[in-house]
Length: 135
Image (cartoon, rainbow, N blue to C red; front, side, top):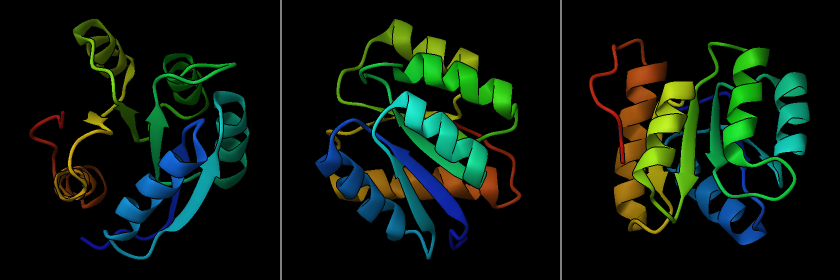
């Protein structure tokens, strides 16, 4: 599936937003929206209704976990992939329990991240049932 539509990339570091945006662009022709923190992400989500959100866990103001909670209140069907470079099993389980569809490490090789993103997009936006969660 070719990814089209709006995709929101949320991270407090501009270079990470750019990096993740480039990975997402490899999946098709999406419109990339960006937010630097959870507060901004919630405003952008409400105004733009993106088809996919890539959300950093560790951010100032409102962290990714609380942002995920609030996104799910705004739209229980939103598709959120959590991003982090620090993996903690409890955090992963909490994010998945709260409704994130997958969890990706930002320190994985870019090619691996594109492959995993493509699988997630195909599963959740391609009309196919999801079979696995990405790491």
